[in-house]
Length: 434
Image 1 (cartoon, rainbow, N blue to C red):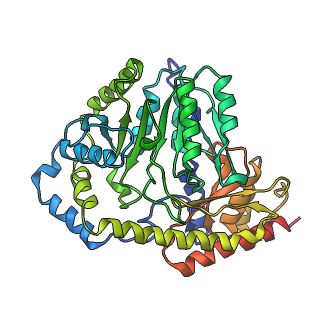
Image 2 (tube, helix red, strand yellow):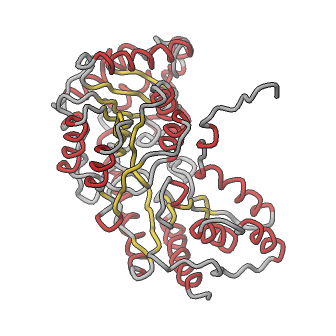
Image 3 (cartoon, rainbow, N blue to C red):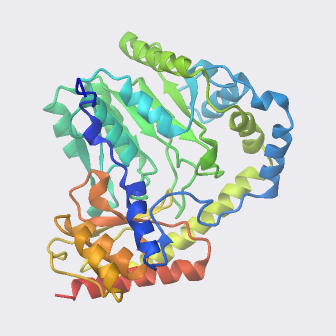
């Protein structure tokens, strides 16, 4: 090219959750039957939507207005409903003008970081959800700045680590919180959230809180919305319908803005995000129309309770299967979202460990894959080639902890049990192979 057309942050864009699919597909062509445990799509894993939700969508599809543009911020009546829903909980109060729709929360995330001044950094959790860490790093053209989530303490944020990094890095302008968390399944207690808000208050930072899983909580945990603890700190909460309804193909998520009008710099930043949306004209109309109808339906709350009861059942089953390996791995009982992150203890993984591969072509392909990769990638590739179970290396979540993330979405309990039992046996076999 005449000039270098590559953005300085292009190398920071990666999404191993989907990246590993290419490898799995090659193994599939070589005869490996794949069990897809890499991506959080409940529908792909067998969840069926109830007829009453399909009926609502069917009725909306018959309306010509559902095929039209909507206002740039989103449908007025839906934004008014969301604002009223937030305000009914107490805490920070918002108006419909503080609600902005996007083509999924992924779209919102890329806008949030893409509009930021390049020198302004947002510190996020590690392990991190890749869309956040990659987008933030790409906007800056630098590696992500992270604070630790502690696997020895229920995956809760290490607030001391966060405090020190904020104190000694003046470029940090915001804090990212993901609660309930992806990839760990942790649900943060109120006191930790209050400490994080207090840090933002002290150092004049804003907060981004990804709350896409805020209604997927179980094991007697209670999710504390950011709006209840935010006080006068400027903040953005991200929510959507892709996980709880679930309707990931709708690409419909939104931003709730807390404490607008408190800081002119923050207000100008939010205005720039809105202006970027105006260039796109609008977000998806049909699912926005459906949101109030679905969430106000008399069956919706019981529907959520049933879903959470299932996630509680499988989270405990997964923990019971894997917890006997506590000398080899750190495993926590998940309490929110539908993921589990497993960490190998120090020194457990070694570069010459392996799992049995029966097919010589698969073995040859695998040997090419595992050269010069991190130890958790090596385990994940061997697990995939040997058993067909496709999980994601934990080091791909912007983490120096070796391990992997697996989903809790499989609806067939026999398959679920077999999958986790196979993972357990594979860990034992892999570790003992040298």
